[in-house]
Length: 367
Image (cartoon, rainbow, N blue to C red; front, side, top):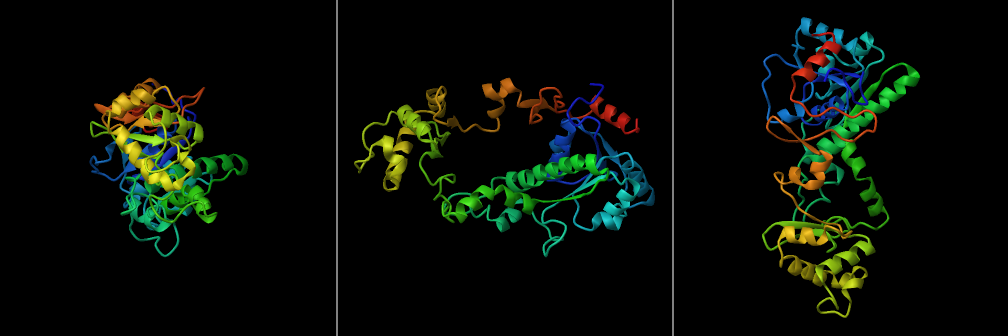
């Protein structure tokens, strides 16, 4: 690969090393074609999240020294975007804050990724995905009735953080085409995670969502939107929300007649909450009679919205994901590839480095 080919080809991004959402956002920008240069402190070694650092070269710069600070500001002059994920005020103290950088390059988009944002009572305190979710209502609404359970770090870190950071960067670059000047993007995980809850808050405000877990349409509160154990101890996921999909679920399960203990037919049970506990029991008992893969085969050609719950080892081998190339092998193990897809300017395949890194360094004038 000798030239950048993604839709962001020609965009130069400086990434000040960080953890979690900012590196993931920069990974996506790099694999969409941007020339991302990762600035690390001298002597920095590999981390447990090394996969987030793929597809872009690294440059060791001591930002605490005058020489290192000047080297970064010189790179800023050639950059379109700078991404930093430090606590508020850190880059200002280092002499590389928004004012210093945009004095060198007024067109620079200075993108800041934090948990709590650049201002507010919690702005300078520590946090992680679970703590940001706790204050947004998202954690309270997630998990079984017995206790809130975080969905790993997908919601605040990667969804509310990385994705909103990228949206902010792309929006600021688009606006720069009109104004000719850059601006500061303040992306906060607490903001993004709250935004992701927009539909739920709207339903709650209209009395369509109860403020209790496992009592709503999308949180396991209805039998036809849940997971069920199969004969082999593995699980299937059921998402038959619409009536026509529910009908195919009932047909595939072979359930006929009425729900036990009632006169309500299985086909009409969606509109009869009083039979949902018995309906759930019937679903559970039926799914337990076959293995996960047997049920997957039964529903494969239907719109019942039933899918096998695949493990991390199994998912990359699923025929649909394999045909679309959703995963690639990087450093000997499966890694998700770039998303979304484009018709004319495909993104770059995941890469741990080497030739692609050298080409990026050349475009930065560093090789």
